[in-house]
Structures are given as C-alpha cells and as structure tokens.
Length: 216
View 1 (cartoon, helix red, strand yellow):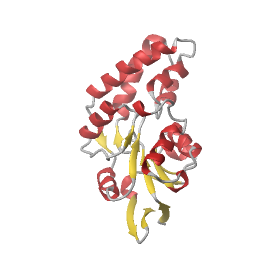
View 2 (cartoon, one colour; view 1 turned 30 degrees about the vertical axis):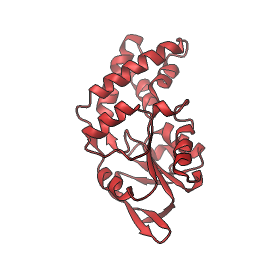
View 3 (cartoon, helix red, strand yellow; view 1 turned 180 degrees about the vertical axis):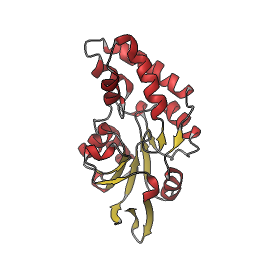
C-alpha cells in the first residue's frame, strides 16, 4: 500500500541513506578500536550516524576530548581517501533528481571533504544545501543539524521529512519535531513513521502547492 506523505522540504542523511559506505566505515573504525581492546559489536553499535569524536567519547569516556577531536580529523581525512566500494543506495540518483525543484538538503555527520568524496564515488550530485560537520556544534542524536537545515530552507520543522537509516539520526529528527522515512533493514528498530528497503520505493509527486512523497 502506498502512503502519501505531505512535505514542504526534505532533509537527507548521507551514509546508509544515499550512499552505502558501510564496509569502509566499519573496517576503518574496527582498525581504530583494535589498540583500545574494544568489543567489535559494541563499536559497531556506536559509530553509525554520529560524528567520529562523539563516538570516541562514548567508547573512551575517560579520555581527554582534545585527543578525540584530533583523531577524528585524521579519521575523516582517511575516510575521504578510502572510498573503494562506496556505491549509491538504489533509487538515490532518481530521488535527488526529482527533488531538485523543491527545498531539500543533506544533513550529514561527515565533513565537506568526506561528503564530496563519497557522493562523487557513488555518482551522486550534492544538493545546493548541505549541513555538514563543520556547520554544527553538536552531533546527531542532537537535533541541531536538522533544525539548521530547516532554518536555512525557510521551512518549519514540522513540515520537513527526514530520510535516515541510523538510530542516532532518527532520534535527532524526532527531537527536531520531524517525520522520518527510515531507509534500510536496521531503521525499523528506531520507530520511523515510514520505512523503505531502498529509495526506489519513494516517488516525488508534484501537486499544486508544491510536492508530496509517495512511499510504497
């Protein structure tokens, strides 16, 4: 059954939502975690959706946060250089093309360099507006990034629909007062209002007042 989702703007996460970067993300983070003796499953439960320095702070709570900031910069640079295997989520190219006439933005925990590297490797065009790590002081699950995206688009949070895959991202969107289309098999555990396996299940339908989303 197709659900009709009214919206005035769309905010899209990147990793796991527009691009599949899971393999490289998990490989690099597990390499980082090895010297710290951290459990593999614990690491993978923490890292998705957050800025790297926040993940480090959660996993190593006693460590000086200045070290986390410095190591995160190294991690971001390494990730931007290592994009082998990064591919577009099915339907992402068409969805971005169909959203082009309407207010939309990426809201990602990546910095600009990493965002451009992964989107480029996946063959996707970056929207005109992107809220990246440099533009916020607090990482998902804090709602700051989504609220800033709505403000920059000039749309009330309640009129925004967020596409997200991670628990931290869905939590951030809900804290911002936004509805969520969860993307991928792991999203359902975090109670999005709508869910799709991939973006081929989403259509952007023009209407007199703008557009609406049809979610199959």
